[in-house]
Amino acid sequence: MKNKRLCVHLHFAPPRAGTPWPDEEGEDPSSWPYRDSWELYFHRWVEPHLRGARTDEDGLILEPASSLDAAGFSFSPSLLGWIESHHPSAYRLILEADARSLDETGHGSALAGLDDGPPSARVAASFASGERTRSGDGGPLAAALESSLEDFQSRFGRKAEGAWLGETAAPSFLDAAAGLGLPFVLAAGRLGSEEGGGHLPLLWAHGSRRLAVFFPDPELFGVSAGRLPTRADVSGAGRKLALRLAGRFAAGNTAELVLLAARADRFSENGRLGSRILIEAFSEIAR
Image (tube, rainbow, N blue to C red; front, side, top):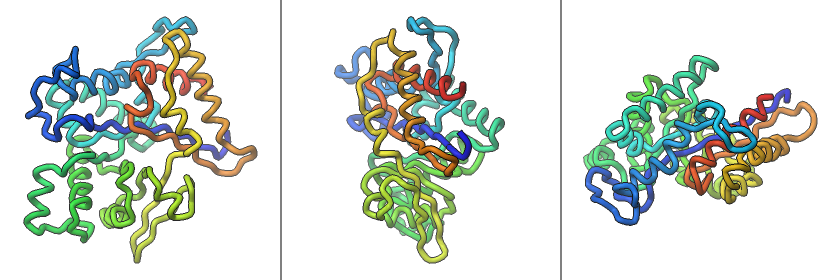
């Protein structure tokens, strides 16, 4: 498909029901068989994408595979820090997936992410003291984004080329992102329609600041919110997903980008099956 680009992006964020301070969370009976909501989230949605598998038409495993080798991804800083402390081998797999992408394409597949909950203690303290961010904006969202970019660079050993803003992408936040030197962001919510572009990319401009903003294709929302098939139907579901993604491209050689971006826990009700479907779809598209 000449001049056609497909991007699938998964964002991993801590459970909304969990405490923003994971080390303080005690045992949670509702998370059984895991200790708490963080362990439940990790085993249900993070680990399956790191330690996935390619399967045959009967659902039998052919070889290990990771969906993060083909998809873009982002983690909230608090979740990534928690994984580093509690599951160091998984943490290394995340860093290695980005490193492989960087070696193969010249661009890492990881983007910076934000925490959905309250700002970190460091962010809250710097904002309370009146410290201004590099963007020139002293607001807490700008401080949270700057903290996230610093955290990203310390972990991945490079500056983030972009960031997942999700539904926090208000105009003032985009201005702060541009001021911090980010080339682009992935956004969600109603900003695209409010700016008149629907799901089409837009160039955010404020004075000398410029920022490319990309939106998920709303026609693909059903893909990320739908129920998943049984284990034996994974191969067929992967082919269907590949056809649906490819079907979003117009005929001809017009340059196009199709973007499927979602929180990992919204993409699939079952992370293991969701990961295998993605892997099968990537294989189908690559043929």
